[in-house]
Length: 395
Ligand code: MF3
Ligand code: CO
Ligand code: CO
Image 1: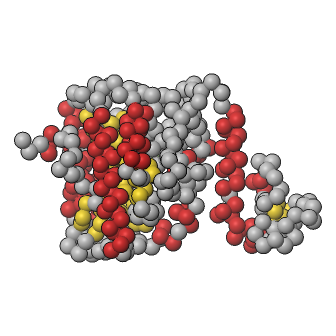
Image 2: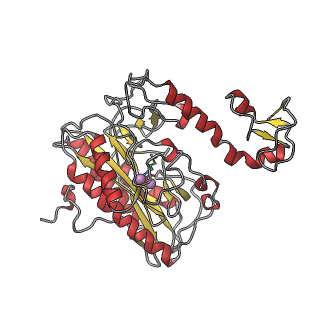
């Protein structure tokens, strides 16, 4: 915060008193002095959490005016200030997978209730909520809404699972997710969340998570994770599964099955009184038994009226997660398991997390409710769910 020569006519953006201080970031970005002046450091600090979005919005406008006009799609991502262009950027790609063009933003009909990031890409309630540090006990009414939303999310994921085959693009999978979500009256939570440009995440082969649906066609032998989150009746439901594309090699089959089992084993310990840090112990034990490694950078999370909140649930062993489970809490468990090293790297798009050694990664996710006796899997498979995992085949 710099002292600056501000004309006396400027009013403090917070309290309206005469302002003599100018936000230095706004000065650097050459933004309007209106709304960027403050009377004291205290007013500046108190305004920061809401004021800072001005900077992000202006960066967005700059990126959008800088892209070639021959390509309609979204090719940027502001997270970490990075973008996707039609030329493949310079990067030390860790494996064979490369980015492809991203189609334009899909539209959600006006009648559907939208989370607060839908319009400008910036979550406003979530980062400032006290539920980032306190684990909420849901009311019976909230729980009933969570059940409804999670069931819709499951049906949306199942619709995506049914179209997976060699030749389909991950963008076409995104279209199925988008259309199924809005047909159910929901909003696809990832869409514009911190500027994420699509309605779900599709993570192929060495992508650990947060892959952006694009024009790449799935190939025979790929594995692909589809991660769906639906916002409906004011709450989010979040789940994902990893699917086989055509005939995959034996090592990939083992990876995906072991990851599925890691989630099952983690869910089996959930009940009141259990420490959140135990989840990672169970997952680590099962993965390392099969010679596989556990991703550390991405964790399970509390969920409800907020997409991501407390508790934080690491999937790796010897973690320092705080707190114990109580009936009425809702959270996700979503282990990401790697064939090779646990370490992850981020693509230049600021979203796509890949394995550092380019070997394959798999993930499964459920949204859970802690009950008096154990866990209710709110996103559980339904009798109608497609039979895509050979180890679940009863016939
Ligand atoms: N569904 C993811 C999760 O399990 C989050 C995706 S956020 C997005 O937490 F912006 F990448 F879509
Ligand atoms: Co999640
Ligand atoms: Co998810």
